[in-house]
Length: 183
Ligand SMILES: Cc1cc2nc3c(=O)[nH]c(=O)nc-3n(C[C@H](O)[C@H](O)[C@H](O)COP(=O)(O)O)c2cc1C
Image (cartoon, rainbow, N blue to C red; front, top):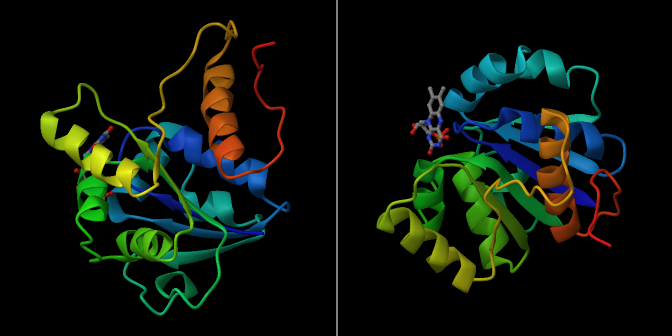
């Protein structure tokens, strides 16, 4: 299975970090990070993204690299995740503005009817954000804002992160037991 994980410049780098850690070695993994995402990743996780990826079995592409296979529909990828997704990236994706590799990959996922999950991080949402999300949802994109639940009684920040990452994994069809399910 091939999965593309795109990291944009919203708060929520720990979700991307945990998702990559979980998928590492289980699937063929492709990573793209935006300019702002790299800075926020370091800020929120304490580690530089390139250092974090060093010992992982992933292929990393710069966001301006349209020679990446992710930029073409002829390269088969099973699922794409934009995590976290800024409202700027949300807007670009909702409007088919393929200015960088992340937007292009999302556009390819949609045109090829492939699974795409958008983890939009902002609060509160404006009507523009909501309209962009609705537009994508109507095209079959899964809008999965990182909203925690408390029925599973999280004790730590890691529990909250794992709940969101587990829900992403569920949507892209990857077996996991990293969060406590309601029984
Ligand atoms: C520390 C920090 C946190 C940010 N958090 C968010 C956020 O949660 N959501 C958001 O939409 N933008 C957030 N931004 C603003 C985006 O980074 C900015 O709009 C950027 O241009 C997004 O570009 P990108 O989506 O290409 O990464 C944040 C910026 C910084 C510096």
